[in-house]
Image (cartoon, rainbow, N blue to C red; front, side):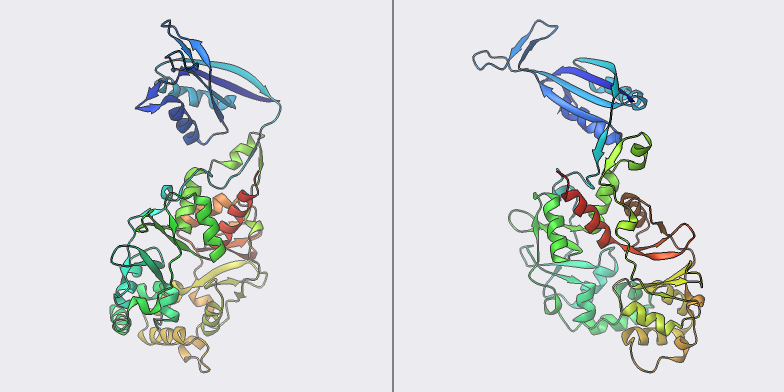
Length: 425
């Protein structure tokens, strides 16, 4: 048996808090606490008040200020926290408190609230570019952004396409990924930009633009992103003008903002359905290397998969480091000859003759050892929080002995978390 409390607020339709209907204000307040509370609002069909006013729902009687009952059921330990603020919200009505003995409390993880619209989540006033602008301008805008995609608009501000890092590399001839280009020297950036100056965005952009209206449900937008394999989605007004951009990062930030502490719920003996852990989305086909693997081989592995990083493990399979683009650049940047060799190899990773500098450098010399990891039993919401706060696109997963198990990505987090939300009744 669980010890719970029932808080009842007996008020009226006309009661407000800061020009908001009181019932809405109470729901917002309880929801914002992220505790294991359920709230229900019911409207009476008739009644009377202390003032002598009689209210009814009958049309022939001109009195519509119907009674409202707001019921909150929650664990007894949380009641003082809720009551602390309720007195300030309720300026017309009664607040009552009763003991409840609850047989069971069951709930389900919904990943993010299903009532949210795209406009509630999107990044507003996004940077955009015209189709006739040079590729160098698109590259500079992306270099200064946390996103790797840029909406392309016509003179009326309507999206006609998207230009991405992949477009710049595969169709525009940009020799380096944006992260490497941003961290390279000014002379190297100027050389790349000069090459991109001669072509226009419309030559390489992905078109037509796949868009969604800002008042559509967020669930519809995520369905579209997953079905099309999109990392971002231009958001438009009803008139078709660009209003925002919706990215996986926007969705994850929403999950972080809205999700309660599910582990705390479980500790209160609340049965939470639909919780998913990192092991549910773990990608186990991730390549690993040893400390003695040459950097030339590491570059080929990075270029040959979509994970774009490599785990370094010891003889027992324990994770001892990671190598990504930024680690390569950090190591070779003080050495001009090594940096030139690195850039040449990144542009042509499978050329037959590797530069001597790369063939003689090992993963153990280059790897980063201060690696953030996830345990296989970590909840998806906690993994989302960690990856969002640390701005990580991928996260290595280890067992309780530190042995490398695989990687998780933003895409797998979104697919798994959202897929199971859609299975809820």
